[in-house]
Image (cartoon, rainbow, N blue to C red):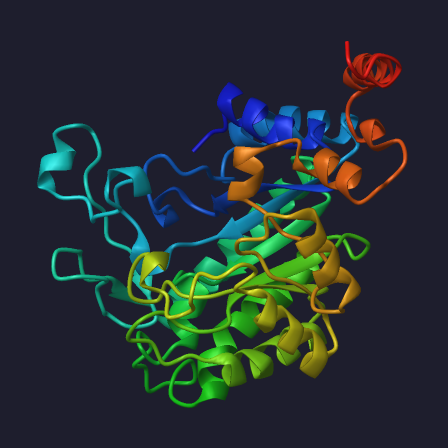
Length: 346
């Protein structure tokens, strides 16, 4: 669970390319809360030291380092996505990756081959909340200036929110108010531990994937409660309750989560962002200027082109767009551009 040189280069080149905020991938609050053995965590002093090296570099490049905090709940102990995302089995134990049992709102496994998760007791709920609080303190020590709690994609918070998984009959189940209780208590504890002057985001699946029962109307009520508890922005996503995000019922069209971001922004009166196939500069600018979203959130497009912000600024006619790059890069590229302008046919 400790970040390596790969993470420094991976995250660092987004900061070098002009991104305003650079998020580390979902980072687990405990070793047995990770989706895969490859997932990072923030539960040891060694991890804090390793993250500090990354956040220091991101800040030197002029960007804001951000951490997305999460707990996979019942979706633990799987293979990485590029290896099928299937649950680990006894065969994987021979390679030093034995399956392990997760926690969840109810003992509902993700598939027929996955281990049945333990239904969380009141003490388990308190323990998981405390794991998040401890992780928040380490996040501060790691040098992060922005924190996001992952409440989406079928992970532990969504497992309480969605009646697809939450079959409880106690105060943490039943109607919508009961199913939102764990998420609200978790957010209250995180907000109390996170510095008041630093932004706090929450990622939500605004609609369950195939076979799910959570929808935008539920999301609006949950988002309102999050706003009242100190969340500054809702990161609008979808899917994941019954498996991979490829089972989403939301068509994969350009900007496919932007309508969710627009609805939450309008109905709740909170800042939003909506990732999903935002690839063109004019598309991104139209989303902002149209009041559909307050931030442009990108992942795979930046993997394809980590200098996308610079190219977008050039496309939109922003002066001195090379200044988004480190000075050494900017100086050389400005000289090349000036030479090309003097000798357009050269």
